[in-house]
Image 1 (cartoon, helix red, strand yellow):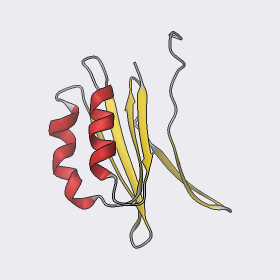
Image 2 (tube, one colour):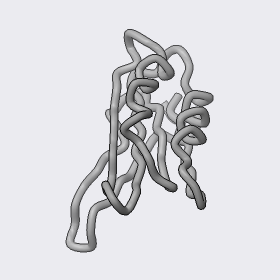
Image 3 (cartoon, one colour):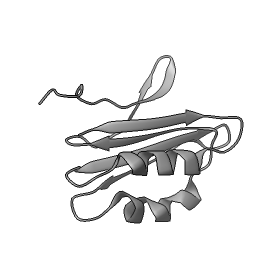
Length: 103
């Protein structure tokens, strides 16, 4: 089952998103990703396969490179997410999943 967790705060929210997304992870998920934004570095993203390990062990080494007061974590059954793209309006990051019960 897919899930997501996001936060926008007045201070750094990396650990909030990390633990919130970890709460959604469970056996059977295939991929996960996290993205954070700060004004200095822009978007920082990391995506890992969870087919051979757990969310926490895959993403703990990445926490040092993340900072920002807005972030998004995605757990996905199918696709590597979040997706980052550029448009004429700027850079965007999105995540998507199937509605609960739709298989």
